Amino acid sequence: MRSELFANAGTEAEFPRDGLPEVAVIGRSNVGKSSFVNALTGRRKLARTSARPGKTRRIHFYRLEDAMYLVDLPGYGYAAVAKSERASWRPMVEGYLRGTRVALRGVILLGDLRRGVEVEELELLEFLDSEGVPVKLVWTKADKLKRSQLARAQREGLAGVTILPADTTPVSSTHGTGLGVVAAWIEAWTGFRLLRPDGRPL
View (cartoon, rainbow, N blue to C red):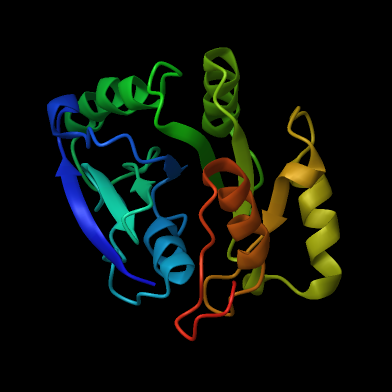
């Protein structure tokens, strides 16, 4: 599957204007967004990974087969940069996520299954709901838990959250588990089917 970094946007003026459907990926700093993007696209180094939280400071638009964009948004929460710089990201990110952007078909919110949904995730879910933007929740780092712990962790993680269990899935970017569910969501939103490097569906 052909994929490329099309735009590295620091302002709204740098967002693509070709009208291709977009699916955004957002999550707390160090939740594994870059690894998740790489696993979805089958490109090990498409999105740069880093042990230092907060590496993604702009909005990255990855174009897939000239059919859609996978959009990597800056991480929130702790990041190894100044608070003033993190605060400067918020208007740009919120401006992008507002329901007025027709190309945005849905948002994939990443959460660490070991931490569950925290205050910032709740605020983001409320914001997306108020904007009428569809959202799905992906639990990352599922391989860090034993199989017997997964179901309990998911139940506890969704406590007090209005999102339906059917709109969530645990994923391991390392082993590829759960990526097929995410690919089905993306296809439903955009009509584009993500494929593995061998040409088979995820």
